[in-house]
Amino acid sequence: MPFQPGRGLPGERASRLGHLEVLESDLVKRLRESFEDPRPGPQPEQVAWDPLPVGGEPLRLIFAVDGSLQVLEDEAPPYKSLAFVKTALLKIDQNKLSKIDKESPHPFALRDLLADAAQYHATVFPLRNVSVSGTSNYDAVRQTIFESLRDPSLERQVLETFKWMVYEQWDGAKKELPLFECPHCERTVATLPYNAEQGQCRACGGHLFVTDMLGFHLDMGADSAPNTIATTYMSVHETLLLFTGIRHFWENNREMLRHSLFVKDGPLSIRAQYSKLVNPIRRFLVYARDHGYPIYIIGQEKTGAFFDHLQLIGAAAPDGSFFIPGDKYVKEQIQHRPDRGAAYGKDTNYAAKVFVKLSDYHKMIINIPTGEFVIDPKEADLLGADRIFATLPTILSSRFEGALLPVELAHGLASLSTYPSAHILKIFSELKGVGTK
Image (cartoon, rainbow, N blue to C red):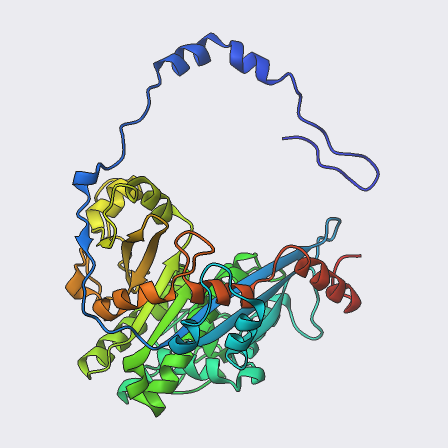
């Protein structure tokens, strides 16, 4: 590894001649000549594409959510670090959407479509070497997470949704929180009574926030937090923001759920210790289905292993078709690992992956919930598949391949681009005395 630049001297550069010894090595030459092209990927006849179902009624209301973040770091010691996070929820009426030019939407038409149709959330995390008066960085991040979920600009609704989810309030059973590791004594004895937002650990008396049950503190040190704290918070908040709309209709007008599609930019999954939310989500989706109100949700993946795999198999797929990979297929053909161990997504996913091809320009990976976990999902397992598939052609965008217009618009609302947004945030943090100097 080269020496890094300091305040007075430049960093060390790698040698431009160092590669010559590698190219002239007899061992390298012999090994390279023995390499062969890998076996081809799945052939079209190995992929069971099915025709999209017909006859479903398109959903009229579309809700889309997306998030963005920017991490600002000092380039010199003590390497201060802040993370700005923004999420947005967008509501779109199909009647208005149908009047938008899918190839070249007029800015004024988009302005009118988005007027009074979006909700925003923004917060900032002190990650490293940023002091918060009277508390440690560890506790400051914990409190920031709690305070951010009860953002008054959203009328505390996201925190209410979080409690509705973790206490499973929809069934009236009044459960307390499952046991989790206390952020103070580190014993797995912490919990809170039904509907509580704050309390004390029963073992050490340390102060608890309801958001501690997610386990953000398990990824933090006493004086710093990794960038993944902000990334995970953004993902969790996107999920909660989406379910805030679902909760609102569930509690006030359930009939609207029969006409609404909820769209998330990204997969419908929650990783690591944060996956504690997955089973409550699954149970609610089953409960809603069994009570006659199936929830229509999709997530769209625009990058990653599944998206890359679609590029391999999508060209040969017939238009108007879909393919649901099972556990064995995912492990062997997409993850390239042995078919053993836990089933793919068993603990982290609340939806199945679905490859969809509407045309050569509109191939996409969408996630559709199944309710209960299904190791090898079929069309019948997908909640509301017929109406979701009927809605997809009505919300396409022609500006990008495989694009859904609600996702595109939500991304535009939530985006914190590297430039100029990052520069603006940097100036703001400097003015507040906690940024780069």
